[in-house]
Image (cartoon, rainbow, N blue to C red; front, side, top):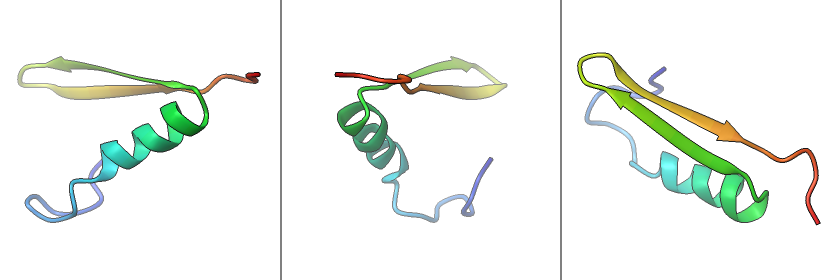
Length: 50
């Protein structure tokens, strides 16, 4: 999914996602990439943390 055209946007999406998911909610972001097919990001949030 793309929200802005190619070459447009701020380029901050993953950095902001990392702050929210990892830093604030203690989750994880993983990615896998296949040449010619694209990249998949998997975001996991804990159901609870202490």
